Image 1 (cartoon, one colour):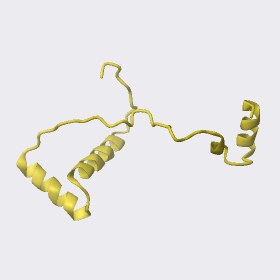
Image 2: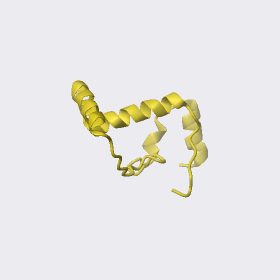
Image 3: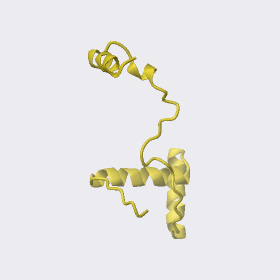
Length: 84
């Protein structure tokens, strides 16, 4: 299929054009996990574990949720540093 034909199908909403692509290897940019080690005082771990158990998730999951919420609240533009 020519690109112009695919463009027309997309523009005209004739059908799902994703059927024409191999989506099995799609990767989100900056979504690969990176390991980070953080030392917390015992009282924080106890509080985190208590809240995680309360909502039924793991310690790691609740920390990720809280960090994601805070970063969304900051609403600052994301920039990538090539030195990482």
